[in-house]
Length: 287
Ligand SMILES: [Zn+2]
Image (cartoon, rainbow, N blue to C red; front, side, top):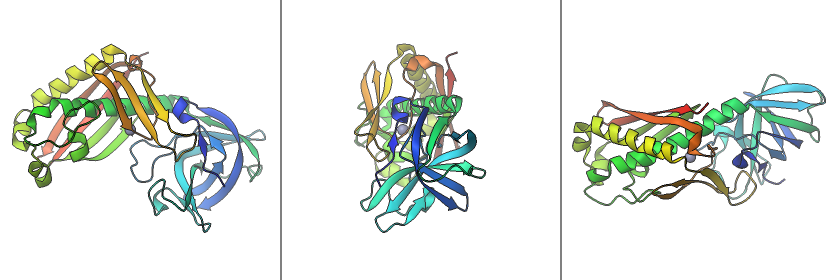
């Protein structure tokens, strides 16, 4: 059985395919097809939620609550989402997109059936803008904090000291926004980051990030996904042609096609707990 072919990287939201398998899980039936436009939530770094939508077969339609990663081991073991015991791409496993159904599968939905797949396009667009805004906010954050490093922590996709890679502990994308959490503990201080200097200038840092984000939105830079192959397990990366240079970030998600899709992107920084920075990113879409 081959890995699932995916079309979401090119912006696909619909398609037809053939059912490969249907598995009953405690959270509902999971349908695997040969090729899908559905973007699944990643099981090891669940930043962008999976697409929702519908599967139709023979005039009957069933809701897809969320697309998830699924995998089959060489010994036949089938696992879904958080139950997959290995990282995406691990040897000895075939990688699939699972469509978790909301409700019972129609009787015509069986292995070998021809089906139509349709992603909820409004939610997809919102999640794509949210993901692009999330990457831009983290690049702007790295830039705005660059003078706070006493040692070289390595660089990000635009050559700034990589605060994101050193401190980001979780990223949650939603429609037109995201919430990122950064750990400001002892190890970051040891790596050469001036945590006290940062806390004392939080408002200025936030203003600098927001000025950078509005300049980037103003540039209307093209944004796209580059794939190394057609299946869910092939590496994908986000490319954004910013005035400072093209940012390239390994990324499994979906994205806006251009920064012209935004009226604005802005962040708020919170240090309620001195060890934890919370960056909340809000995008306003163009009409
Ligand atoms: Zn990403």
